[in-house]
Length: 147
Image (cartoon, rainbow, N blue to C red):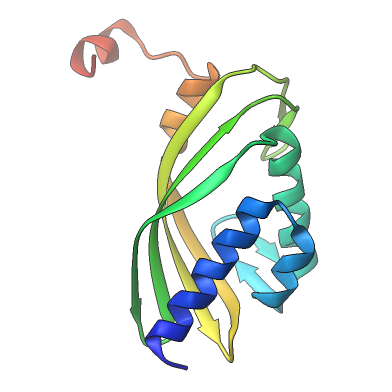
């Protein structure tokens, strides 16, 4: 597939995320999809993870800030926004709703084969995310260094 087609697949995937319609993910994610970062295997497990995030942050949206394609890989610098109004499970630790608005950024590397995403690796600014939710409180020293 061309680089532009691979980028269009990822752009369509982000549009599906923002519509919160998990059935649309079937158009973009392969049945044997692997998320190496979240340690998820399979489209159904990916959908379950997305459903949990939608339930926790029902107004969440993902914006593509930059997108680059090379070979079968597509790199995306993205921004996530949302409001924490539902219980959120963070790797088995439940967090009750805080009502707080969050914004964080990340980079995802998506591998596209035959028009479907088969793999993802990502790095997200979870430290800032957890700080915004009030889960992590910076020390006085950190507050002085990073006002």
